[in-house]
Every structure is written in C-alpha cells, then in structure tokens.
Image (cartoon, rainbow, N blue to C red):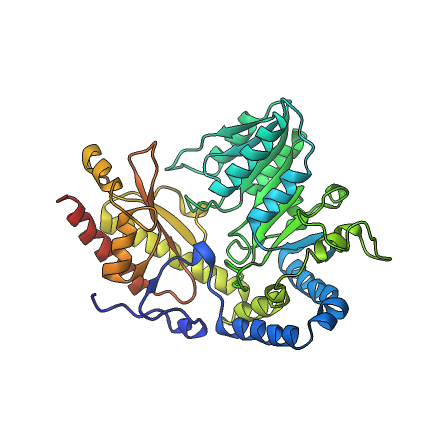
Length: 410
C-alpha cells in the first residue's frame, strides 16, 4: 500500500483508524473521543443502578437532550421526539397516517432508498400510490427541485417527502421553498434531514415549520450511533404514536404532553447515546474559535475545494452548483464503454462496486462508489469533516485515476 497522506491535525479528537483515509463521514458519522467518554460514563452509571436511573432520572435526561437540540435547531424542545435513526422516524410518521385507497404520497428519485421503501410499503398496504417525480443529475439549480414538486401535486396528495440533503447525490435541497409550495397546496411535508443538522447553516425548524422533520444526530452533530430526532409540529402531535408502545402508553402524566410521555421511553434499550447529545453539541462547537458556524463553514469550503480538484483531475464537470453542496458531494466518474461497464459491474464486491473494494484494499481509502442499473454512470461521494485534509483528496484523485486505468484493461 502506498504511503498514506496525513489527516488534519484535528483528527486527534477522533479515534479513526490511522491505516485508513476516511472520506466517508456521511454514511455513519464518527464520534469524537470526548463524547465516547461521556457515553461510557453514562453506561457505567446505568449498570451501577439501572432501576433508579431509568425510573428517577431518565425523563429529565431525555429532556436535557431535547433542550440542547432545540437550542441548536431553533424550535421548542417539547416538539422533539428522540428516536434511534431517521428511518425509524419516517416509519413512525407513515404508520400514523390514515391513508385511503387512491391517496398519493409524493417523493423524488434522489431520496434515500430506505425512505422510498417505506413510502411504497405503507402506500401499498392502504391501496394508495407513490408518485415519484424525476430530478436530473447533473442538476442546474434549486429551482428544478421546487418545480418538480409543484408539478407532482394532485388533489389526492396526502404527504410529500423531501430530503434536506440527499444521500446518494449529495445535494442541499431548497426545503424552505418546497415546504411553502406544498403548504400553499394543502400538503403536509416530511423533511428527511438526516445530514442537515451540523452541516447546513442557519437551520431554523420554527421558521421552516414543516409538519414533520427528522434527522440523525450521529452524522454531522457527531453524537453516538443510534441517536436521532423527529420534530412534529404541535398541530400534528395528537394521534402520532411511537412504533413501540411501552408501559407509559395510555398513562398521561400531569403537566406533560402525551406526545412526550409516549416517546420518552420505548422499552429497555441503551439510551446513553441520547444522554450524550449535549456533550456532542458542546464538543463540536468548541473545536474552532467561531463555534458551530466555523465548523460548518470549514467543512463546506473543504468539500467544495476538494470537489473542484477531483473533477479537474478526472476530467469531469461538477454535477451541481456550489450553492447546492454542503459537506458531502457526489461526483460522476469518467465513463467506460457500455460493454466494459457491464463486465465491471459483474465483479464481486462487498460494497456496491468493486472499485470501492479496490480503493479500500489497495489504497486504504474508505469512500463510497456505486452505479445505477438504469444509467451508464458511476458515482463517488466524498465527505468533508474537520479531521480531513486536502492531501487526502489529492491521494484519492491519484488512486481513482490509476484504478480507472486498470479497469480500462479489463
């Protein structure tokens, strides 16, 4: 394996493997050491006396996490349910909809596969249908997203799902404009913001005011794995229930909304990741003098710079304007002829594409690569976090050039 490039000096805050060039923060995130230590301390307290912690302290600790998140997200803390991931949140919202035959659910073809699967499942079970509007990639600008959603609405549309930041194509969507356009047409919006908190500056859920907004905290907030939230606008909270009903179901607590009571506790599990969310927000916000605004700006600028360099190195065009890029960016790789691509796609892989396996095994690079059955293109998505350096992307540029040359001989 070639000599690996050095990460950023900020990498000392993370426990990432030094034998890896880790350019895939977007998939599962990475938790700083200090936050891991915080969670470990909570686990020790839990195991020392689980009964008193769950019975006496759990609700207050969950509220502490909500308050910390609410300040970060600019919304009332009482409108937040804490859930293990955004996929669970999307399932929760869809399970709570009373769909009828002929109803429609609206989404686009850049959505996360798990969310697409969820919409199809609940629609099919009710005799409803999913309307999937097509968005181009490459894309010219945010207006194309808004126009596609406006064109997809019919009198039967019950809910529109839209990502704040798309997972496969790495695009920041104009969710404020989509939410308004749908609201003007009487359609509720569920925003899948899985990547947005900690990446997208000036996130203000009260101003955005969708019916529902979910996001993972373990991605760009860098909290422990299995921590996410679901914001539910107050007028949509009655009747929305968690997928798991615990002992607290049907037992309202004085002075506390039933929404919080039911979502507070969903059976015995490890809630220490949620207890550690305030630590993650503090830790990441203290890494640069400018606080969180500096973190988000630094990651965005590194991502845009790396994308430009990679596109130039590989002789391709950036597939979206910089205004639609946050801290992840998807690049369309130089194409092969159709016959060669079909041969390449038949290679065994532990990931989505054998090129990703080669980059990991031969170069020590962890970065996602994939193709789509209905397109001749292949895609590579980079992430930019404080622990990354420009030298790591330059190393990636060389590795991909050499691996594409190998592929041209197959």
